Length: 327
Image (cartoon, rainbow, N blue to C red; front, top):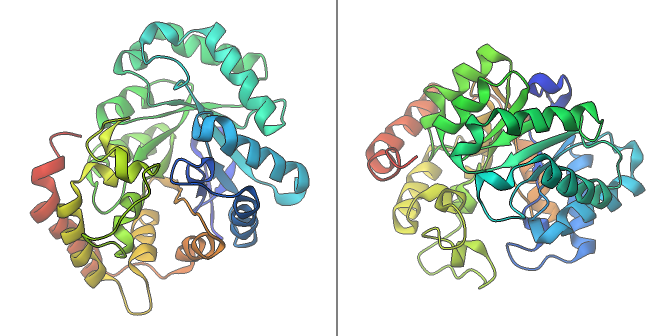
């Protein structure tokens, strides 16, 4: 699989990575053996980048990855985790003592002395303007607790503020055919600064697979049931902030754009890969088949102008009026 440099980390990662929110049981229960099989399938398909967080399953996702790395030290996987959501979302909680405590927990979960990359996990906007926060992150690097740090953001404005910070190695942001706003300013700014871009929610929580209907029922413990309007966390993390009915209609149109022989999901991932400045896209997977199918998108030929123009037209007609201003 194609490898790209992940911004200021200087490390190569696979252009299709693996998001492991699903493995923490926040999308419905996933047995540990099934989670391990997903990790195996991803690595066997060329994936060298896992993304997790300390709150995915209250650390379960990190622990599963840590167990996998212990069994497979030859896998050569770069692991990015996140911190900051274990405390009330107040700027005053983003201090060095808390960072060290959260960091110790993640290092224990993952079974490593130094974390490859730690990202602030969608913190309050005021955090991005705090010199003290980024001084504390520099201290973690100096102490060799972490090799590099980045941020996960909800808005383009947050991303642009972070990119201006000289120590920020990467920015993780929602980017998919239903969320185009980062293309306007964030990706160009990141390219100019040498900051990596990690594209999350690439399939709009599954909408872009084209498999859902108005009658689809999600489990009660699946965030697609309980967070459609931002009841538990930011609404953008669920269906990219698009209301479900609008998303279903748009997904039907998007599926019609898929080239012959390509699924809608693979087409969406290939579209993201083609955006200049993207380091890696991190679709999640709950099964071996999903992990392999996601990885296979990296081998698709470049999408033709018919598809690229169709995505822009679909966004402008159906999605921009409802989401562009919000994000």
